[in-house]
Length: 318
Image (cartoon, rainbow, N blue to C red; front, side, top):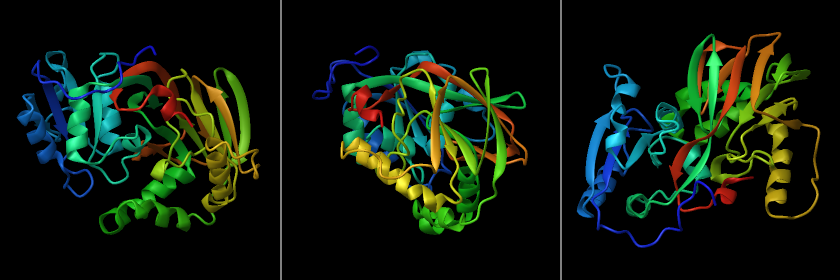
């Protein structure tokens, strides 16, 4: 398949790989298997350069010499991974989404292992897939996202989870979702590839990858390599009412028959979407809560990033 190397085999040390590791010390609880992972690469003969993200050095400066390396390891949460993917887009250099954050949804969508030894073997094997990347534009400020960008209830959930992460980890998102029993509704005004659309609901998501925690599909027909977003319109009265739709998505993935539930959400497709709302709603991209509120524009960047993974392109679709 285009953009995909041959299936992974036993690691080869015939050529010393040059690996750039860029890590965010603030991701998760600041504790991961990264030191063991780096040591394993070095034991296999790889040349590893490590750089720490910090306010004093712009992210782009950390990867300005990326052409000197064979691959990039982005160690952190989803925001760290997507920011580095965006900074190195269209370079063709493969990127490993090392799971060092709280939820690590990008790593889950790529079916990455969490074991340091298995991750090191993936890097040495060199298997990768090429997928799309998203770009979100708010007041002229552009950022990249690999998973999804949204406005409304999902952003409110992420906002409310921040103070819970330290004590509850990934369960913070579940607890925060349960708090959204009566989220604010508004009229959303959309422009999808030039076509206007309005609806009343609790949120809008432009999804590139489509699996939530534990690889539960958000909805069907999300393909990160098809050159378009799956736009999810959240019409439910609260997030808990979307659980039946998750069940439908899982049934579809397992080929268990027709949907049992409908009406809580609607899916559309677009390469570019502008979202505005009568009432300003919070924004997020790949778990990063933005200071700004609606409106925003998201556009697809076709096949802009190569992610290291053992799975095939079709295995990351929902």
